Length: 244
Image (tube, rainbow, N blue to C red; front, top):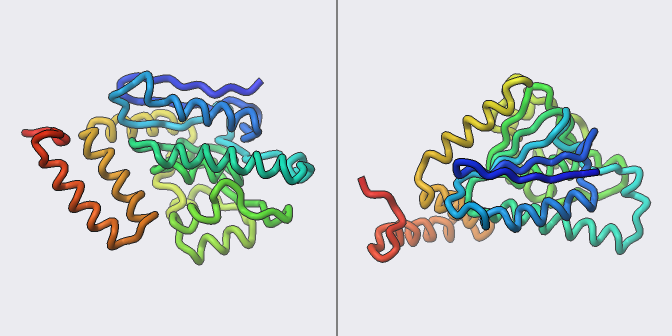
């Protein structure tokens, strides 16, 4: 039976996927993740960082493609819409999100990781988008988030070829932010979360909002929004920043 757990401690929320052995993102897991992410801010109003992890050796091998291609049109549409809602929820969380990636991270599993703000990977991690091998388009927003992460040319090449990328190359092309030894992943991810969480909550929220706003609305609009955010930070009625 699949599980999705959420443990909140010291302003850090750790969401863990447990659907061994491959941690497939099937309909049940996606529904549980949607519910978890939706409720994530309720028990911890001072939440500063969210960490997404997985049990077992793989972050997520995506989906069982052999079963997926047997879905009818309505089933596939519902699945795609559920995944879309999940990743938009993660992307729209007002605090930084870190994905701790290991082992096989494939298709929708990699799409899930791309919805995070930062990706830290173990040295055994491998990445791919195999949809072109199955006659499918990219799933869960990967056609959009991938090129914003690694650039248009690289994204097209990875999607066209469906080839596998190891952790070393993933770091070189900017698919992940850091690679660590296999046995150090949990510790390093937690250390990064603590480091980020030690900063100003209002600043963390502003940084994420401004970058996402610029990506969606455009460079010039993002620049103007930054001016607005700074003006609001100095509003004596809101007290958004910590005075020295």
